[in-house]
Length: 420
Image (cartoon, rainbow, N blue to C red; front, side, top):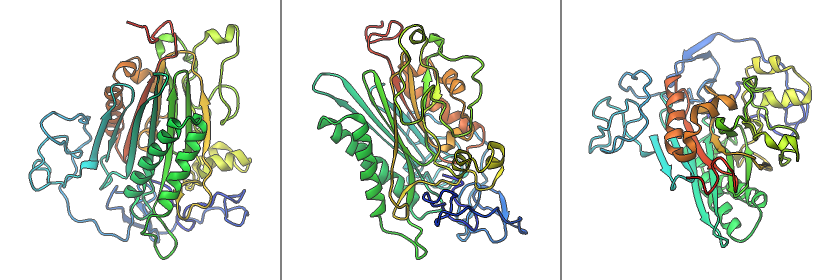
């Protein structure tokens, strides 16, 4: 995760209605100070007294060792079949010493990770082009239930760059949440309860991690999860990692006029508030497919200010604190309360989980759907690679993680279980 700290404020507390720990309004930002040195990770020039980069979250007190000149962005994210691929230059030339023979960069297996569980769910996680390591993580499970149905569990976590050991925090949270959700589902619990149990277990695991700094700054990450059962999708989240429902364009679900999200980071789930299951009305409305939509709402400073009526959308997103998160997993997070929502789509499509490394470049649900469907219904890994490549081609300023779960409603006449 890139921008989560704001100079002079730290991570914003989630308790005060105005964003301040004591409940008061946070003061307006101070006038910019003299420009400081450029960030050695992403090149952004910040204020002279900044400790963390406002763009990528890099700790400006830590010098970066010299490395080879960074190559231009390339859409080379698929393994070549001839060994591990360097995420910096896209070649499969990793030497026995663990360094890329082509560009001279060190290779980390987490720089580029892929997983495909039989076409039922797939993910790609990539370091991007500016960060020194991949601080995102994802975990996937497919469960064969006693009734013969498959339940899919997916979790995506984004480490908070301004915290210590963010890569370990995201890995701990993703694996813990996914394993707990799977175990809870097997015990017969409902998806919403399994989601809450998984997030609680992940929050506890991250909070117990060693490595907190003297000032209280502890390992931290965001989390978004999905549980897909026949006919229903359940999503839970803490932070600003997102979940999207992407409708198959063949079903005519998306209105061409729906070109933009109503608010950056605000759920576009049709009808009803976030947290309430969405089911189309019976009758004529049920004929239309469930349209593509952002299912989550960012736990960010900007969305909080807008919800409180303290600022207009334009004012909130023009503020330098706009993308600071107000909820996260970590020892300094306080009580973690995930938000959970469910969806019962009326047509085929795919559920997308992603970190901000993708949605910073592409955030409109119908556009995402048009890019990956209908291909994602049969080849979710190829679709995840496509979205990852898009983010890399457009800058790759942050780590990128994409998980896709194809969805076919039971008995769907277009692409149901009996579709040839």
